[in-house]
Length: 139
Image (cartoon, rainbow, N blue to C red; front, side, top):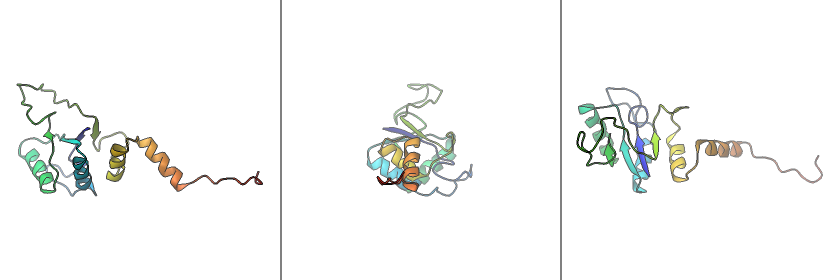
């Protein structure tokens, strides 16, 4: 699966142009997804040295992206890529999602178990409030 991942507010806290503190379990989850052979693309508004700093920050934590701000590593702007920077990804992980960013454990479950947000929330609700089984003599 190809997964596009935002940086600021998703992997780290928003502190742009600085790099904020890592969000809990972000790089650990990304490493696990890479180990499972998912292709991760860093998709960020950062450019130039700010982008290089973000990529290096991730690399130092064991997160090597398949590509950065493009569909595949060999893609060259102006040659085999349009200027729109529109990615072809199966999943987008971004703090600007409707409803915000779920915790990284939930994100991992959604990807690996192929479950929607609604399915996971319904399961949590069921775990928190299991239905009591009525006995035959209860009305």
